[in-house]
Image 1 (cartoon, rainbow, N blue to C red):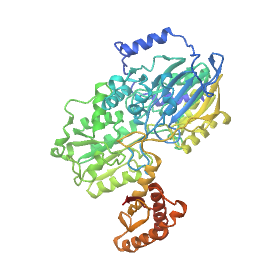
Image 2 (image 1 turned 60 degrees about the vertical axis):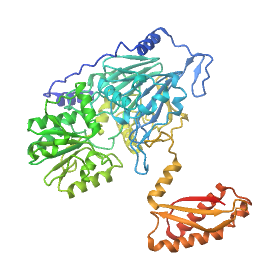
Image 3 (image 1 turned 90 degrees about the vertical axis):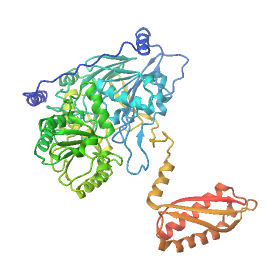
Image 4 (image 1 turned 180 degrees about the horizontal axis):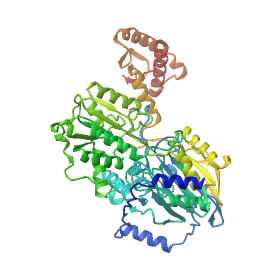
Length: 619
């Protein structure tokens, strides 16, 4: 298998441009806080505090920990909010701090972040947070979680930290955030953990996998990856480093990306996508609008190169896209020829054959530039007959309906829309089955945990691990909050578990949107609202007059009078029943009872359950 693998790598890479390594800046030496902490770590030997209380979950033999514990706080029950904790005694490191975009039933929610309540109790033990790459599902939660964890040090590659810096600036926490830039060829020591890195190919440059050497065994975390013989940035994955892990056969457990574990073959190379986009830019007679993820730095470079080659001026729409291009250009990950990118306000004045608009909105986001263009609401870009729109992205699960609505609207306005179903205009940043088997064959782990993906994706990856030589008993399916214990190079799943609730961010607050609020929003969206006002005697609690009822989005006008009469009648009949249970009912008793009566009646008559809002006025 190894010889076959070596031949595959050599054949794929042979003849391609030699990799161009980007020089990574060393961590700044003028950071007094960082230097003092580093010096302290060098001098201080590990001595558990005898006065400190350890729970049963932290097992010790005398003064020395006996197990390493690995706890995923996110990323194993969904695609997104990736976060993993590695704990040894009183020392902790964290891998990634991402968020998840909301699912369809999370009305009014902006993001979902991991539940860090368990980690917050141990924030003084965190030695550092290591970031695998700069996608928001791996760094997006940093501004929300970092302050709650007392600002532990962050470690990541140059581009990753550049994107993190932008986020912490937006949230006003830059001065408290300690950011350390790592070189993938260096080793960092965080308490009892020794961390090394290997480059991986992904849909954003500067992604790394992590090798964590612990007192109880070696852990390898791939981050998000694929194997691309011709990546857009021409920087190859560290094949030699990855293969060296397998030669030593000392990897206790491999945590590996499962996003595309159900898809056959190898992931299409970025070179193929670049060639397709180049052909479209060359051959399209009119204006071109290309929508893509703002983090696809390599893809953006390919588009800029083709635009210059075929004499098109580029206009950029979408704040995240403008910001990411500026960051990547400043750090040397994108080269923008002088004068190529023009002011978006002048886009309509440029002849179609010479114009290329690069925009956000490939997922049909409600306020994105492409959605506004499709609705005719964009301030500077209006669709004209003969325009070509290229959606260079694959729909994230749950976004399909929104994307196809945008495509329909663009088509109605006269645009020709090209997506991956028509031509190869996008490739995933995640490895398909053959890429995943390559990783397994090179690393040769004793134990295996599929991560990053929904259950069916991770289960398919587990099956691939069996095919690649991992014993079925050593491939373990974990969920968020499960605890994997590593001891003497062997892994076991603990019976203990850490609580991991969904923490919802709605723009106004974090974690203050409970399940009841979401249920109410769903009821409001599906069945409308039913507001009933009851006037009662303050002394006797008896009902005075007829209940006043107002509805919105509940029933048609033609049905309303009959239904509302029935509700009033039912309330008067049933109101006296309440006094049998509560001789002198309180306001909350009355509200609960009124809600129950109305809910039963509307469900029986209309098979609908509106959001019911009872208002009690005491006279």
